[in-house]
Structures are given as C-alpha cells and as structure tokens.
Image (spheres, rainbow, N blue to C red):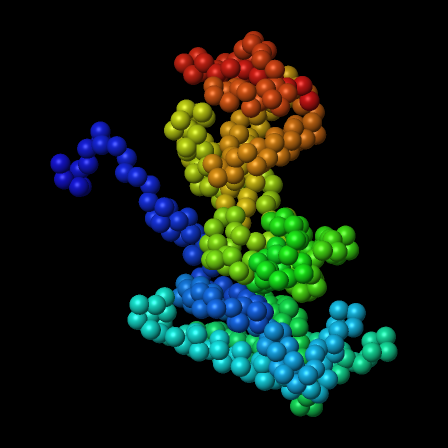
Length: 457
C-alpha cells in the first residue's frame, strides 16, 4: 500500500494541534495582510523582562505583511527619573502636570525607551525568533500638539493633547515596509515639547491613518496587571469580550473599579470608533501570546470595542452561499440535515438568516412560509461547532419567530430526526404529519421518517 493510495480501513491519524491552529489562523493571516494596525503599550511592558517575547510577536505580525504603528508609554521610566531628583508627577482631576523638571525626565525616558525598542526590533541572532529578520524602524516628529493650558484654575504646563498627526509622512514610512514608532511626545510650531498620553497619540494616529485596528496592551487585572496593582481585585469579566462605543461612558460611570489608565484606553477607543475605526482591542499584555490570540483566533483573548455589534444577525446574501454550505456540511454528513446543493441554496438564499462574527458564519436558519395555512417551516437550523451552547441558536430562533409573527404566521413547524429535544425544550410540541400544510405533506420524505413538531406563536 503506497502513501498515495491509503488503506480506507486504517484509523484516522491523530489530530495535530499545531496544524489545526495554523489552519484556523490562515483566514486571519489573509485578512490582515496589508492592513494597518496601531499598537500601544506602556513603559511597564518595556521594563518587563519578557518584553522580548512581545517584540517577537510584533515581528511576526510585520512578517505577515501587516503595516504597524507602535506607540509606547514611559510612565515607570519617567517616575524613576523623577524619584532620582526627589520629585514626582502631580495629578489633578486625573490629569498630570508636567513642569520643567518633569519635562526633562519625560524627554530622557522617552529617548531611552525608544532606543530599547529599536534595539530589540534589530535583533537578528541565530536560534532566536528574530533570526534572519530585518525590521526598519522609523521615529520622528509625527505629532503636532497643543498645551492643555489652564483648566479650572490649574496650569498643566507642558502637558498637551494631540492637535494633528502627519499622516502623509506616516503613510510613506509604512509604504516603505518600516515600522513607525511614536513616543508620547508632541511638538508645537513654536518649538515646544509636550508630554502626551500614549492613548491619545494612538487614537490620533489610528484616526489619521484610517487604521483597520487600534490595539491597547493593557496593564490592569482585566488586561494583565502587575501583582502590586491596587486594582488587582478587579473582576476579570468586568469589561467582557465585547463593548459598544456608545456604552463606554455609562460603563465608566458605573464601574469605579476601572483604573484610570484603562479608562483612558476605553475613552480613546470609543472616540476612535466614533471617528471611523471599526475595531479597537484591549488585550491582556502579560498573558503570553495574547496579542497573537486576539488577532489570529476566532474568539480572541481580550475586549473588542466597536461602533456596531461585533456579531451581526442579518438576512443571507448570495455571497454567503459558500459559508453556509461549510456550516451545513458536517450536519448533513451526520444525517442531521437534508443535503442541499449549491444550486438549490442559491435559489433559496432569500429564505435564510444568519449570524456572522468577523467574517465567519456562526449560525443560520431558513423560513419557508405557507400563508394559506398560517404556518411556516423552520429549516436548516445550524450552529457552528465552536459556538454551540453559547445561546446563538436561541437568539436565531427568537429572530425567526419575530419574522414569522410579523408576516402573520401563527404556527411554526420543524421536521427533525436527531434534535427533537432541543426544539421541545423551546416550546415545540409533537404533531402528526397530517397537521402540516398539504403542500408540505406532499414533499415529506418517508425514508427519512422525520418527526414533526409545531409551536404556536
């Protein structure tokens, strides 16, 4: 027996988890190639001994053809320099005051952090993840800033806010295949230097470039806080996997446990969404490989902020046919559903509704009305194997029932061979074949011997 002609009686080979992961990641690799991502991380990340691991992940993303803008903070480095001078940053109403001494420390810290990042991105040692890699890095005066000025009688001195981003130069840097590196600094036309929030810089850069993603690597417990954080008891699920930009103000008002640095990321993310950025991610920085999991797996590893719901429930379109066929195929192979050809599905596509999660069809169902009988058939109810027991089937069923009611349908029926209990648990009652509309009785497949269940709406 040759390898090209395997014995059909041989047992299936064991699953290779690595190969499975690569195959799972492939659609995201294709989708992300050529896209622009703005990634922001604090000075805590640079001070972490595991920072090279994060740089390796960033290098991988660059190697996949993603256009990267890196925005870094430098708070611990600034505070260390201030402590060495017997001073400290002062905060009023959550905003820091940058006096002359603090500004000098900001400049020093930002310069040191920049050099450390550039050094790691230049690493090319054999037997390391960076072997054979050359990543050009460009930093510069991309940010024009303005002073915060005097607010409620408080002069914030050299603390500023983003006024404008030099998008033309940034795009030229990215077009050349380089990584753009942006410190938390801005410059004024009068030659002044301002201390900026990294979150503000990242938001401004993302909006100016029309970035595909804005990614915050957070330091809070919901995003990987340091063990000595005062907020270490913050519930892990406080933010949840998905947030709508319009809900963030209410969340911040209700959840006092959210640290200020995370609140800044949330505010900046919501503002970015309101200005056209479709996806903003908050990722747990200290969880190993979290950045790759967020970008290359279906469920990610952090919190996604979007202007519109991340998972959309909508009518199916003709370009969904391939995805629906892939969703139905495993159930058809097991005999749970009747096999449908592509041609039939194309002609009946207007009967289908589906939920879509970032390009993946996670569930679908079809509705075939029989108006003269006041009934409709619910068919092709399918949920992706990775998303079962998550409430998607219930959500889809409720939507189909709403559509049926709006059309004047009084009763919904299903024909099933293996999922009777699921429907019975949701209010469907056993019925005889004779209870179906005559047109549907004529199409009944006696070989399949499906059971009939009906639900009054």
